[in-house]
Structures are given as C-alpha cells and as structure tokens.
Length: 167
Image 1: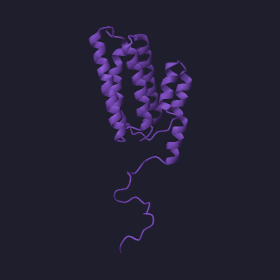
Image 2 (image 1 turned 45 degrees about the vertical axis):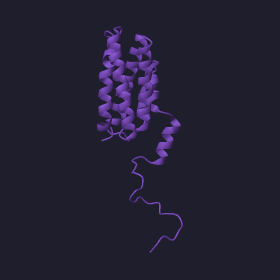
Image 3 (image 1 turned 180 degrees about the horizontal axis):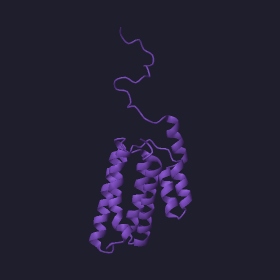
Image 4 (image 1 turned 180 degrees about the vertical axis):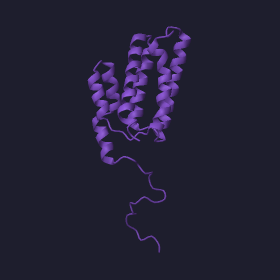
C-alpha cells in the first residue's frame, strides 16, 4: 500500500524524537518558576540561608547523580583556591583559575546539548560561574570568594536534597 495522504501517525517510531524522562507539564512548570538552582545560589549569596534551603527542598529535577558528578567535581576543584583566597592576586594563578572556569563552562554546555545535564541546572551553573569569573577579572577577590562559597552551598544543597534522592 502506498501513501494515502493525511497526517502521519504521532507515535514514536524510527526517526522520532528521543524519549524524554520528564513530562511537558513539569518542564513548563520549571520554566515558569525560573531556574531554581540559580535562585538557591543567589539566596545563599545574599545571606538568605533559610530561603535557599527551602528552594532547594522544593526544587524538582530528573537529573541523575552520575551525570551530575563530573561537573560537580570539576566545579569544586576550581572553586577551592578561590574560597581559600590562595595567591589569587598572583596573575598566573588567577589566569589558571579563569582558564579552568572557562573549561568548565564549555563542558557544561556540551553536557547540556547532549541532554546529560538538565537545562535548568546547566544554565544556572553557567550564570553563577560567569559571575565568579567576572569578579576575578575585576580583581574583586572578596566578591569572588563570596560567590564561590554561595555556589558551593547551592550545589551541595541541590545535590543533597534532590539529586542524591533520585536513585
């Protein structure tokens, strides 16, 4: 039998879109709420700790632990010298940290495009890392340290309250 016209079936067949693990309603709900991981970061940065923890507890994600682990570890390693403010005034050390943050940004974008890292987490991380980079470039070490500490707290809160819970 040949093609008879009319609309094609909407089922998942060869060449169809990849299976998504979240429903369309949840995706729209997350878009309307904004990027909650970014809200967690800004709440920690502004000293609103209870608000940050509440946002982390209410956040819903389908991010797997194993997919998140690589980015988490890369970010934590890069933030360590910033949080300790070790030799950041040295131009060579600062450039090395900035280069590492750029590499992480590229890796996040790559993982996001492969749908390994969920879009809201990826975009939130990119904004927070850009802020840390900006402070470093302006030699605002105290602000960079404060932003790095807030990002670490936000990552740990999202990991503890949501991602580790998704077994």
